[in-house]
Amino acid sequence: MVQVDDLQQRVHGLRLADDVLAGGDLIRPALRELRSAVKLYRESSHSGEVGRQLLCQIGELAQIAGWIASDAGQHSEAERIYRIGLSAATQAEAHTLAGNIAGSLAYQLSNTGRESEGLTLAQAALHDAGADAPPKARALYLDRVAWAHTKAGGVENGQAAIRALGEAGQALSEDAEGIESPAYLYWVDAGELRVMESRVYTEIHRPLRAVPLLREVLSGYDATHTRELALYLSWLAVALADGGEPEESAVVAERVISLGADTPSERVADRVRVILRRLQDYADVPEVAALLAEHSAP
Image (cartoon, rainbow, N blue to C red; front, side, top):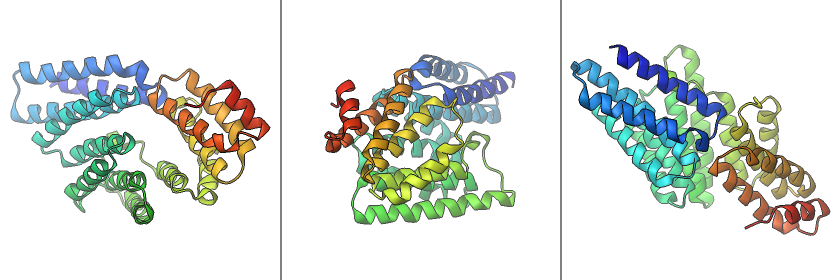
C-alpha cells in the first residue's frame, strides 16, 4: 500500500528532524502527522495486514510525537499521545514497539514527579518484552529502568540502577551477533549507554565516575544536535559542582545557557534551572557569582 510506505518515510523523517530540532519547533507538524495517520487508518479500506502495518506506523509516530510534546513541556498532551501509540501497537501485536512507547512514557513520568509510576511502567515494559526482545530494544528498556530507579532515589535504587546499566551493556553487546533490531532504534548504541551511565552517576552524586564519562561522550559529539549537547553539558556542569570544581562548572553552565537560548526545549530550560540552583552553594566564588548575577536562579 503506497500510503503505508509514504507514512513510514514521513515518520522516519520526523525522527531524524528530532535529532537536530527541539520540541517547540516540531510539535505542530508532529501532531498534524499523527492526526493524518489516525484518519487514514479509520477512513480507508485495507486488508488485515495493511491495517496492522498502519497501526504500527501510528505507534511509531505516536512515540516520536509524544517525545516531541514532552520536550516542548506539554506533558499531558504527551501522555495522551503515548497512550494512543500504545493502544495501536498493542492492537497490532507489535510487542517491541509497545515496549518502546511504554518506556518513553515511563521516562516522562520519572522526570515529572511521578517516579513510582515511572519505575513500575519501565519495569513492566522490560518484563512484557521478554528475553526474546531484539538486543537494542532490550538495552533501551534496561536504560529506562536504570533511569527510573535513579529518579526514585535512595541507596537501593541507586544500586539497582547501576545493575540495570550493566545489563543494558550486555544486551547491546548481543547486537553484534547479527540479531536484527527495529530501524527506529538506529540511535541506540554504546555511546548512548555511556550517556545514561554518566547521568545516573551524576544523579547519585558520584562525580568521579560521571565527569570522565561525560568528557568522553562530549569530546566527539555532533554539535548539530544542539539540544542533546546542551543536556549532556548540563549534567557535566552539575557533576563538576559536585566534584568541587565550581569555576569550571560555571564555564560549562554558561555554554548550556547559551545553547538553550536558541533551543525551544523545556527539558533544556529545566536543566538550566537545576544547574543554577546547584551553583547557589558556591555563590561566593567569583565566576559563579558573575553567572548568578546575570542569570537568576528560580
